[in-house]
Length: 123
Image 1 (cartoon, rainbow, N blue to C red):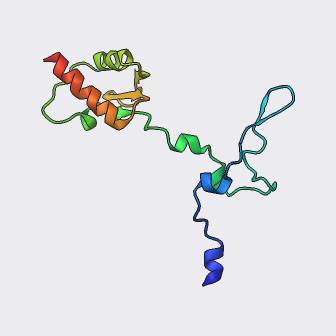
Image 2 (image 1 turned 45 degrees about the vertical axis):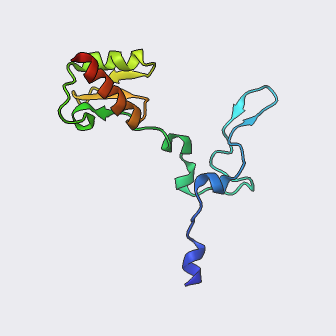
């Protein structure tokens, strides 16, 4: 049984990599990404650690307005919601694959709060 547990990685990528910096400064000031797929000893990392773990913490890249809007609130036109998000200093645009969705960099909680504010300002 102990042989099975030896091959199981229970650490998160941050714990596994420790305080290692993925970007090293070279003499000319350019950044090198050569260590992204290797640990400090030069050994290969497992495939799941090769992805950029910062992107795993990023918010979802789009929200469907009909799914995320509380019931009973009228939102109006999607372009007005996009403008409202942009005025609140977020990046926002419509999606090409879902006509009822908005792409934005705000979190789900912020998005829901902004939708409520927008709906109240429309009435």
